[in-house]
Figure (cartoon, rainbow, N blue to C red):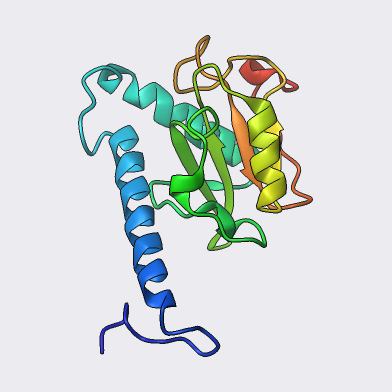
Length: 168
């Protein structure tokens, strides 16, 4: 019996397919994050990779989090489960994952023409908090074009870099 097909106590036998799908989805998003890190060269943003990583690390450090290319699904921050294929592209684009004390701490996302109303709706559905940077279009993915939304556990305070409208 493989790890993927093992039944967990209290789980129905049919849940193994969902677990496998979730793991595949997590792996896909981890691969996307690796593109940012420069492990896979991106023709459009490749020359900006160092700046993007530097800004991602600075933001994490300011909040006491560590940036990682190891992704996780949104439900790891909240109470309710979320499947990545349910998530809105106007909210979830250019994802950055943060960890604290070996636990998921935040997901920063930088959509173009982001829809914060939909972000709040998703946060409510999955019982997490979401914050928008005080300065519009201040995401480090493409400053001036990408918004910045940060999903965190309920009750978490998010601090912003000066270029995002935070205190210097």
